[in-house]
Amino acid sequence: MCTETRGDRAKLRLTRGYVYLCYAQADGNGTKTVSLARFGDYDVRLVEFVRARPTDPTPMWLELYNHQTQSGIDSCCCYDLEEAVHATEDLISRARELDEDCGE
Image (tube, rainbow, N blue to C red; front, top):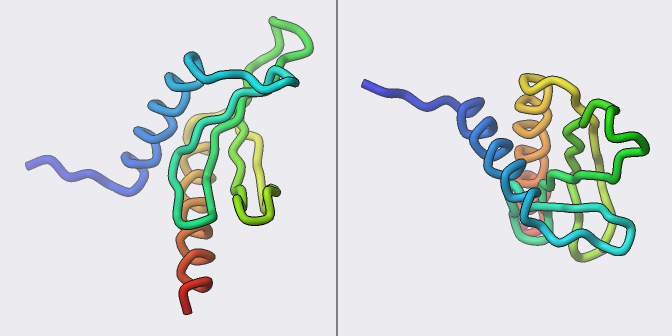
């Protein structure tokens, strides 16, 4: 019997998002963004910024974005996959809560 945990789903979302970043269109600043999960106007996104030096480690930058206001609500920078998994879970949970609060 195979059981999937919430962390497994977040890790899968991050892995897919990282692959999709390879094909994502960069904006005018060279930044690439892909959605990991969306709840109404609230989007959890994986963002890749242009690195100052190619040898710099590539962090995973996560953002909770509000499409209605076109602004970020929260973000975090992670250098470790497990840290990024936990941050993804937290941001998805917040996005879901914010969307539910709007529907009341």
